[in-house]
Amino acid sequence: MQCLVNGQLTQDTIMTCKGHVLLEPVDVMAVQSFDQELYLEVSGYLLLSFLIGHGTGRVVRWMGKV
Image 1: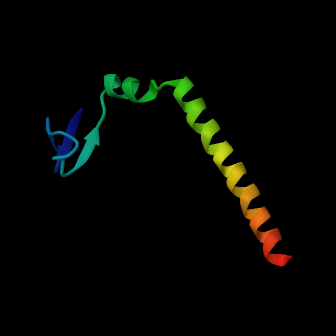
Image 2 (image 1 turned 90 degrees about the vertical axis):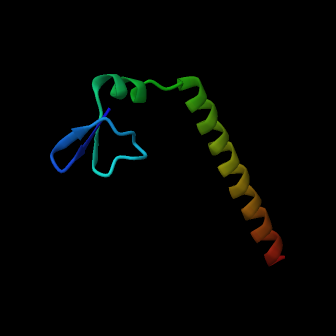
């Protein structure tokens, strides 16, 4: 990874770069590889919590009208 500041390439880190961060192919491959099982598990839990929250909200709304 390199940092581009005012036309100069430096080896600054992401935190210290004051310009644009240029990724190298190795960095891009590291970003593109992720754990698919973890993604499926987290998205499943998010979907489940949405459905439970939506259902609970409907029940609370129904109880408020009674």
